[in-house]
Length: 278
Image 1 (cartoon, one colour):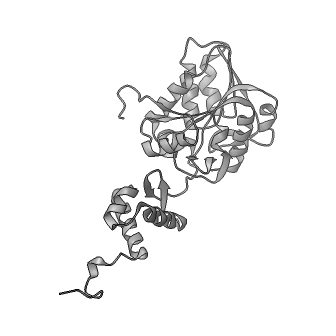
Image 2: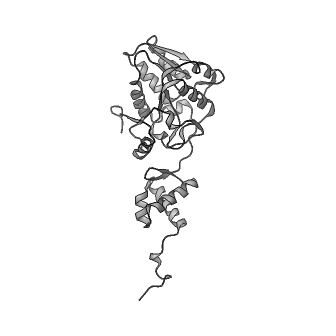
Image 3: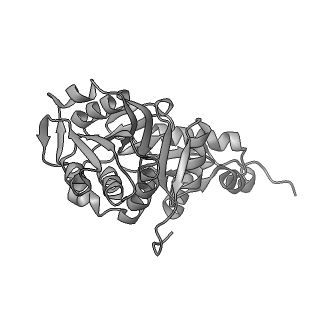
């Protein structure tokens, strides 16, 4: 007996609205869904799946990544320095160790405000082999971290208006020193690194200082732990084309790293610290 269209329910394609709702349900369960898996699950083409995911992203319900999608996370918010310092501490120290190896005797560098860059300062202070290095910074925390390495390391604080939340110095005056120097390498922190939105930060005053730091330096190194990848914060710092190297940790999502590298950005994964979880 032939089935009528009304009887043959299984042969009907799933409506797009229903299909997309089910995709979101799968995403909530798994935290990551692949285009190929969704195409097989719903018996549609990968082109259709990508269109569904793009539509869901446009509504703010997920975030597209290489090969699939992940849940949409809230935009990063600014946390006090002491609170941020304990988050991903081992990963930040691993990044700092990798960054410190890029500094040689006689270099002039700029260290941006942040917990990861403070870890870089601590790693530099611990390098007894390092001499005649000049460090410019807008961070009081970094200046204090480098004090023990004097006179091997000379510290120049930019000056400016104090932001107690990050122990940082911003405009007015904060950019006067930076506008007058030509440093070798800048190590810059951030709250987000995204393939489309570039490098972003959570507050406007420090974002302007970051831009000045980048302009004042010949080599620009962004240091960001894995939690920052794929994130987009309030203020745009720079495009990825303006970055020479991104140093992140070994926990970084492989698909996000691959997507960043496809833009032409050089990405270095810092080796985990001995005894730290991978």
